[in-house]
Image (tube, rainbow over all chains, first blue to last red; front, top):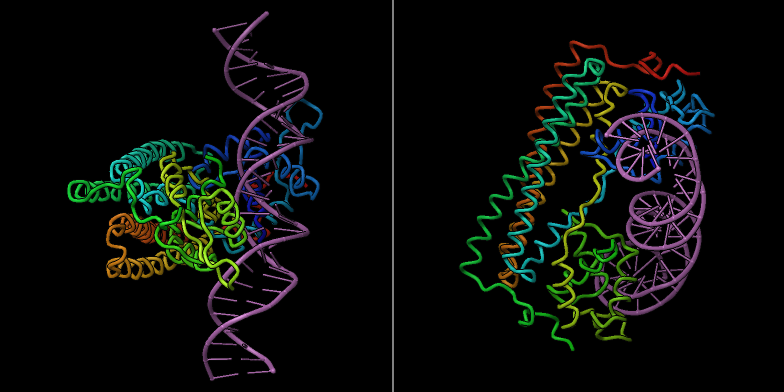
Length: 196
Length: 196
DNA sequence: CACTGCATGTAATTTGTTACATGATTCA
DNA sequence: TGAATCATGTAACAAATTACATGCAGTG
């Protein structure tokens, strides 16, 4: 499965829930899939155009101001095929952990600050997930899909709670560090290559 | 901080631990930072060349078969500056959750299989992290950086354990689902857009 | 002498982001 | 009537992946 197929999968999947405009599609991807997925704006319309060309998606009310895109039967079949392919593992790029890894260069205070921010963002995420969960559970039209959607909400909750637990542990570790060790200071020659 | 600055940060950071060849650098990034960071092969040499041009990295033994790259004093300062900048939040792209979200199209059996695989991969990750932790704790030359490095190992462990817990919960939920609801089957017209 | 691993790089292609351009509708 | 929101797209740019090309060193 090529990488762009993943975009196609997301777009087809969203349209399999209900037909909508490209704009609404983007909102949907940002707000609903946003916890575990992202598509940049500039990808959605080209993807829709291509899907339309292949007959996987149908444009309704063409000509009027806003078109509604709906998945076709062939599109639904294609979606099932795409979903059945092995998931691509996204290459991780965690900027916070990158900074903490080289934390000796950054000093314990800045590290503690990074951890604190990460903790807060996890708490915000938990609140947002609680809202999403309530919304899904309340929406009768989603009844048959709700169990699956809640699986992804639950994944986010587990992950966010783990982040909070880690952050608390990390803060304690850094507190211990600050009182015992000397933080790296700018200008203090902490084991650079020795060059220059 | 532009996106490529992150690559520069990773390369400078790795060289701040010890000077090494481009090849070793790549190994280091794959094996040591691999839990939370990735750089593709084709980025490392161009990044090194640019860093060398800017005097942030120095090439030793040039002319011989293998060069050793070392961070310079200016490079170390630059690294501190880069680390102090706010971390970029990577846009999430979780192929497993994308598939589960549209799980109705995929059917409970395939979903359960996806969850099982995710669980196993988390267990493998835990084993790998235990190995990494032991290695860091045993390496006396890393003594002053070990507390920071272990913070990132711990983050991975928390995350992997959360994944296992989620997977168990999800499996139970899917088991309940399979006996009560009819799975979507290919060809059965499950609420597609109705087109075609 | 063939094979494997170490080593350095380039080129083509694909992806992804961001900014821009444009215009309709709705609501205060 | 002015601002905000909905809506559809394009173009320029930045970044990342992958495959390719090359060659040395050690080992069996």
